[in-house]
Image 1 (cartoon, rainbow, N blue to C red):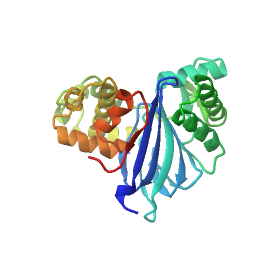
Image 2: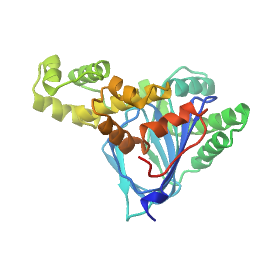
Image 3: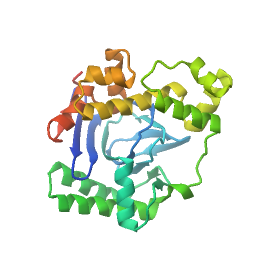
Image 4: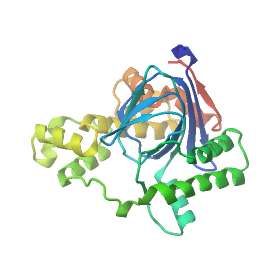
Length: 284
């Protein structure tokens, strides 16, 4: 099989407020990055080696994947096998509201595991994806979505405030906040160290250890998320790139495709063509 047989089907469902996508015949490696949203996905075919938050996993058909916002991760093929994968991207406000509706409590969920091997929850995930793809009634889509989240929240989550996770050093937390506030600017390493009054070496080492990504990769991930928001609002890709802090259009396009599997134009079609299927092969 060649890369020309790769397929990416992407949908945006305005009823649920989430993205659903399917990747087929994928050979692409995905570099270390994170998402601002929750990701719930499963392996339909092929094998992948996944690195997430310092742990490693060998994934195969039927395995469930759960990413919290900012869970850094990257993956690569195993034994040259092609990846078939389905997933949902769920914004934090959507997840928070659904969790409150399901449990009767206001809280931000935190997935307690990143991988569940051979999980029967994948059937519920496929039900949500199929309801979105076939443009089922809002009732049917919402019911499938809530059944899926109910299973995950019951079996594999805890309220965020109860999660015994890694707490960032105050200087690192301040750096993250600075990057988030100034992502569109031409930030330098010197500028970052001046903010926290500590050495470049300390910042690079400690930031990467605590967040799982380097300061530059963290900045680029923020820029990518901001560019996606602009593309969703029909901002032309060249303007979205500039406003998100990418100074070079070709670099933006390559970076965007490396992390999403789509070009900016392909991604924008999801939102400018009534949320219906964007099918992408090897188009640049």
